[in-house]
Length: 338
Image 1 (cartoon, one colour):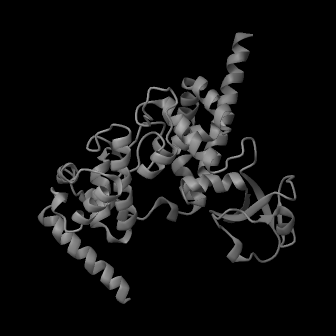
Image 2 (spheres, one colour; image 1 turned 45 degrees about the vertical axis):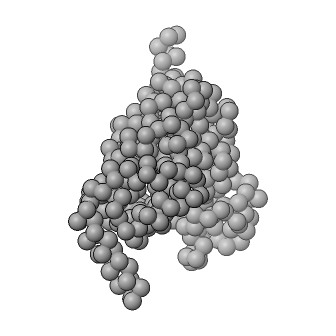
Image 3 (tube, helix red, strand yellow; image 1 turned 180 degrees about the vertical axis):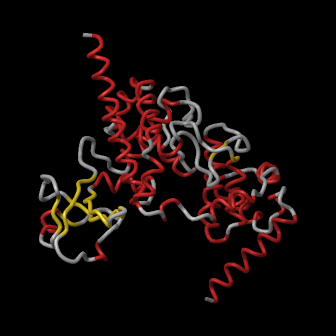
């Protein structure tokens, strides 16, 4: 209780400061230490950094957004409706057809299924329609210096922003993204950009904001780096006999128990599955009660993109819906030509 009070007291002091000089982060009492680290660790020029931070603005809308309950607090039957609407499926088919050559090339190069690449971009930004209009420097400065609950994380992302801007010869004041500083078609935070973004067309810039080739390759590279296994299962429905051990349900850690081991605990995949495949038991709340699934390695990989079992299921089901809709459209087109 005392720790919670202290955190909110500090937050209150920071917000008091923000209200006084919201337009000049160079004067924030915690910025000199940040600049000093950037100079000593990475060789930045202190004067230039100070000038850039002087133009960063505290945004109350960002603080309001991060304080709102996350979508993942919704039960599955409500959460699912957000991402599996018919418009998003149809737009996914359109995105796939418009970028068919790139998706095929990237899928073969990185070993990641085309459908999941399309689905991730669809979940994140509706295929580039909603990539965020906040300046990334505003988002990361606001959360890094005026949001104590996660200040360390976002201050680290602000550090990464300056590094990527220098490496990619970008102006950090011009980059835009979400209220949390996520950017481009696939919504990469700065650290993810530096580790996983790829320049697919070879023009010297990994442009995840306007270049669909680079954006597609970057999402695929992220999945490859985290161990995606192309053509392998993501989920299968499961039947549970007897009482469920709640301590083993809904983990987003890497699966550690084999299907054979889970069978001994009364957990049976509803379809034929390799007994040695590692899996984790997942529960999804439907209106009539919970339904159970087994998630495999590829489920775990999706949760490296977003640490939510709900997100992982939504992305996978969207990928399946898009794949099926595209197959139907391809078949209809062939039938029309015959």
